[in-house]
Length: 357
Ligand SMILES: [Zn+2]
Ligand SMILES: [Zn+2]
Image 1: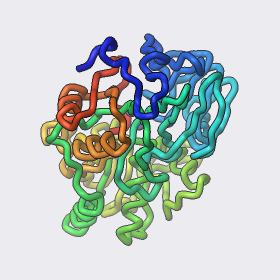
Image 2: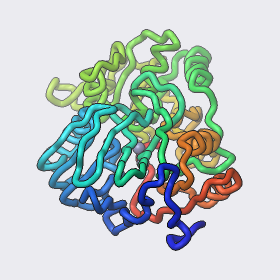
Image 3: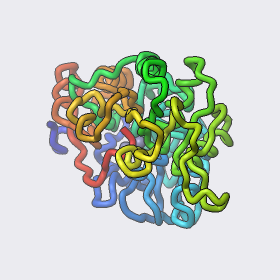
């Protein structure tokens, strides 16, 4: 790890080093000449939010700058807490914030997810938020942004994490459905991003039957559809109280695919499904023990984060002389980057959890 004293050399562009105009505060990364935080953990006056996951999009900010899609997600999830004054930026649109120029660029993580390019006095700092360098039919593709300093996430920053091709994981699910014809396949998937990606990948694999949803997944699927992401025939897995069903599970779910939030796959809700076979879609399913702990019979390794190789390749591709690592396992990635001639250090930020792996 590199301490601040050693990081005084200017970047490629010869501008003033971003370490001189940023600081890590209890709220998160603060950009002094812009007067804003990126993904602050606590309510602040001015926030730039990379995407809608709960560990990045916190409630209660006064001003929020984000993509149109992220702002829509925040309003859907946080209601009044989504920010008193919201400013939308399109991908690639440059906005002056204080003495900085801010541009949001696709991060390939979930709908609306953005990397934040911050330019100040000739230097370029990019905060990736969460990202993946793998094609995803539900969001705009990640591309490395040339910069002097790159702030990377590190959720899966260990060599053991090498994500398989999504198509192979989808095939496992469809094969299992053919093998266990009468069983209801209930798949745990995070409500923002993973659920929609899983549906879109199933559609891409030619699966055109109705896909049944736990009620908690309906609003964000509707939001994706409203932003032009086609998900096909989606139906509620339970008949709600308003319709006189008291949350009754539909009888016709035998042999069908049902998506539910990870918290629901092990509880009473899932046990009411006809002969449920429990699956889960997550990068963590690479760790067999995690699957066993959750009672998952069919682990599907589908991640919305870059894997070990993806993280290294993406950091290198930015051309950054220096990488700040946050939000996960810093040590291994820092070593791997230093071997490649890139200065790296952990950007200590507590409070980020895995909502979305
Ligand atoms: Zn995320
Ligand atoms: Zn995150």
